[in-house]
Length: 135
Image 1 (cartoon, one colour):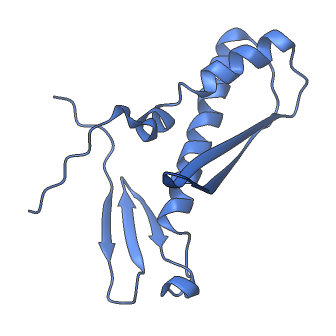
Image 2 (cartoon, one colour; image 1 turned 180 degrees about the vertical axis):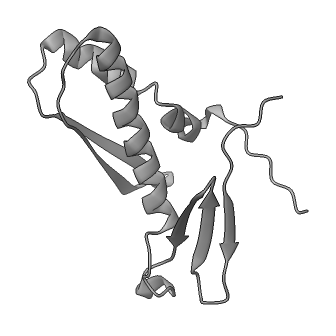
Image 3 (cartoon, rainbow, N blue to C red; image 1 turned 30 degrees about the vertical axis):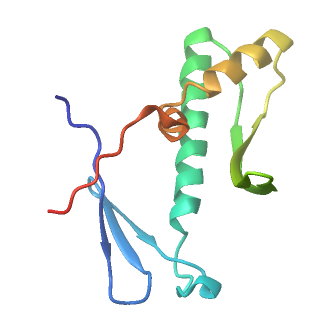
């Protein structure tokens, strides 16, 4: 069994303010005022959207470098869309990808496929089991 990246999150006693540690990096998590937080930091959902956008952009850069394609700056805008359907509320992630440099139609088609291979997005799509335990 191989252990991959880990994260430790401690919810403080200040409403929903949490402190996270990832390797030797630190982040703060909170909720907006209207949800009972103090709006001191991004929400968990904002971090998730950022993680997907970051992973997609890095995946595209790695692929394009192997192909010798200069895409310039890669921008990934992530949005969470909530739609009410006859089966209840459905959530959908919208990923808008833009490149500083022009790309060909063939590159466009291939890069769209590669974007879907981002490991973080694949986890969110349901390819990873989450095992919860109280220790």
